[in-house]
Image 1: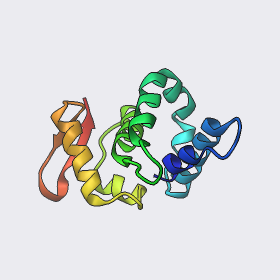
Image 2: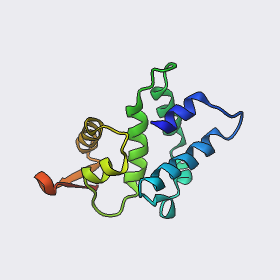
Image 3: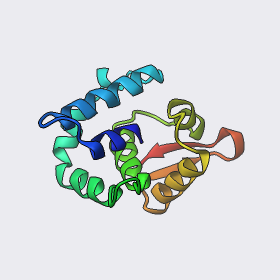
Image 4: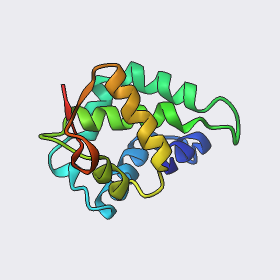
Length: 131
């Protein structure tokens, strides 16, 4: 959400996108996700540039009226797409402290519905795996 807000205020004449990706990596690192060592976020966004810009537009349709869900879905989608092995709801919640459990649940439900991930196990042992 911080990154979307940063992109919406567009503080620099040039380099806002690159700076937002550096900030994304910093936030992921501070949350214990060393994803930058294994995944080139810059490359993932470059490969999905059209979707990235569409998502930015649909998430920022007015000053102070951001809809974070499309942007969150996009970012989680490109990161989950590169996940190796299974992950849990707890992994997401612990790694993304500023995202509500309701938003995580809603996003996981949508990813399940669209057959992007599959659910493994039940109850506390529930995990997810990219299809």
